[in-house]
Amino acid sequence: MARASAPAVFPWKYHVFLSFRGEDTRRGFTDHLYKQLEARGIKTFRDEPELERGTDINPELLKAIDQSRSAIIVLSTNFASSSWCLRELTHIVRCMEEKKRIFPIFYGVEPSDVRHQRGSFGEAFAEHEVNYQEHMEEVNEWRKSLERVANLAGWNSKDCR
Image (cartoon, rainbow, N blue to C red; front, side, top):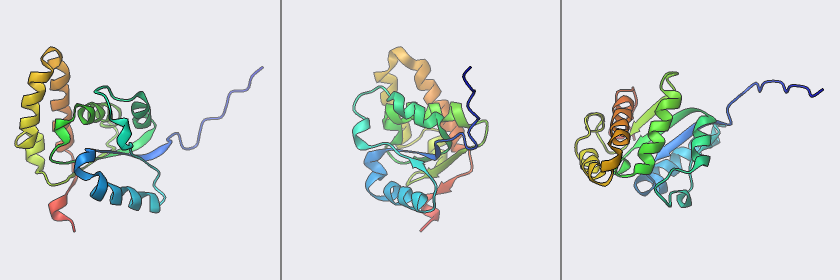
């Protein structure tokens, strides 16, 4: 008779899932943040540049979100222009919002612009509404996810050194 394995003491593979728009922050802020988290023993998942090739989100990425205890979302100027980032964000919100494990960083953007999808966020959604006319339900879910995250207490890069 096979023995049931004991439950893991720490069910999470990662302490943090780091979500960001690579072209905006990968070679600066996000690299620095990742290194600082890891140096403090905080096991952090971040995608690699080669993962974002098609429009569908990689199943491995969704699995990493599921296996993460919390998420840091770096909301930057071009974040909303990426359907990949928005799908990732929506999955994070589904998995983590209830347990209050989402920590937004507003990097070069105002939280109110994210919340109300103004500025670059408004421009991105105008494009999504054209490009995803057959998937407006998904676009509306992206909008709601951004609004939820923008309503959370987070950090604004203009307030930090």
